[in-house]
Image (cartoon, rainbow, N blue to C red):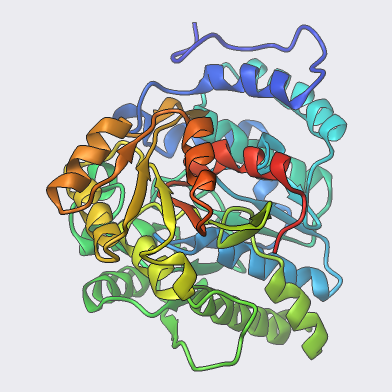
Length: 432
């Protein structure tokens, strides 16, 4: 018997990605932490599969904020150099096949399903019991070997040391650390030092490491971890640069990615990219990050900022029309009270006049990933001086916001983005 469901052998052909979603959710643990947060199952599974993660160079990205954007930038730069790339990220926004991308595109549905059927039969034969995230991470590594990628860009899911992605021991792995903040404290620890130590767990012996600028407490923990692995961290300072097409908070992610590409240029004799190639790489950002729509004349900005650090960065990047006079739709995933309070404090700092608190339930990574109730969110915001509306239905929340004929900001969680983005796409296929 499978720990979180039933060991699965694919008996009938999967016809759609929705079929795959329904099948894979059976691998989801009921909650994060405890026995689900361990690297041992993943190591055994990868050994059973023949360690496909060692068949190509890997760029491994950990951090609290900016992991996915930095991953996309690095992948884009490599593709501009003519390299065949693999990319895995989480959570997914547009579909589950977004977690296994080849050359900038999620695997085509039929290819994804064919690979998945074969892969799940192998997993079943192993008699191991991976979680949803472990399964999809192993699947990505396995597909990248089948597809013979030149490089794989791998985003961690949670932390680093015990994350399911942390199974690459090749000496040429490049480690990348994006800004570290207080998040997932119930699993990673309640201090920046503890969290940074977990993130630094991706660093292997003598591997090259690049980091964004960090708080001095996080930096001390990162440096100590790197020293134990006989390596040093190069911190990439953010310098002023005219990047009009990028949100302000993306500048650091972009410059970190460019430094990593420069390292690969020197190490692997990759071509020096031309300005037009850099511009193309810069503009291919992930879905749900500072994404702008025009819906019947109403500008809508969608961003999955899901902690206080990300919300502060988003707010600092917003044009005036998207600040306190805009309508904000927000939902916050269930988390420790300190995180919820910190997120609400950032929203309150704008003195938003029109806040709609909503809610969601999404089946990714764990069963029933859900937000705090809309009414609870609204009450907490009221206590801090706002006058929000609580609308639990995403459809009704979006309808109410658009009726105001004001700019709309939707934020608070990538899971919220994954749930509401299809509604925006259905309303308009043209982004402003």
